[in-house]
Length: 145
Image 1 (cartoon, rainbow, N blue to C red):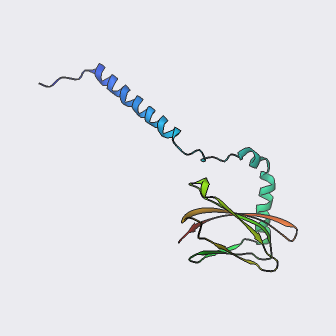
Image 2: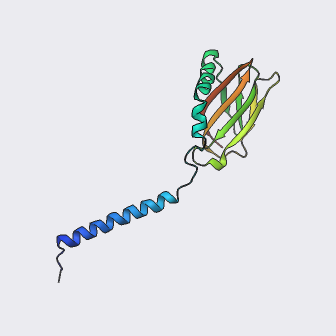
């Protein structure tokens, strides 16, 4: 014997399914990692003009660093000797972020060993000074091991 489903039971079943969906989305969002946003968002906003000027300086002086990769090293070549740093930022996991100091006396080539750097996409941020000018350059790379 088949029981008929009337419209009242259908509405209750639909509401129960919707509430289950909303509850599962809430649980999923509370279990998401907390590093999905930049904690220094407002501080970076205050220095936006300064950063923009440094990015424009890279274009004006044609000072983009050349980046190449071998099996275990990342080679970065600048147009002139520099002092600064490069930050490796992993979009998927903030715990993997790394920073390396760059200081050249006369050399324009830097080699960074990649043994502790995970394979995958990285956002590189170069901040350096050369000839009394400040520069800022962003580049996305894919580390292959």
